[in-house]
Image (cartoon, rainbow, N blue to C red):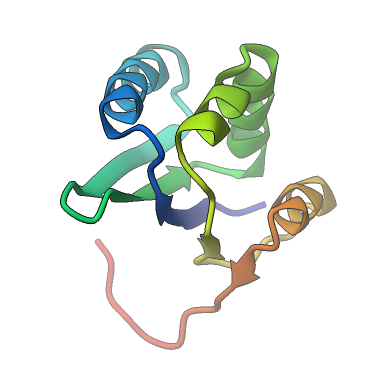
Length: 118
């Protein structure tokens, strides 16, 4: 079981609403989800687009996050504020439960060819 790392890209329907939502979500993740190693949101305000970069310690940490997002209604709220135009998985996924979640969003899985990360 390895890390889970991916990006989500898409247009924002309500930029100010999404900004408020994102800040609140990140505060919760920092306080309550230690298995989330990175949850970063980058924005192009003029184009009203965002990119999320998410990194989880392992597949269980990702599943915990997904359960939280569903149980609290935050995923539904996020989907009212932005469209998930593209999800790109940046590492190999081994857990079938995680694969099914990504398949529901038509995610693209890439595999590293070379690189250095510290």
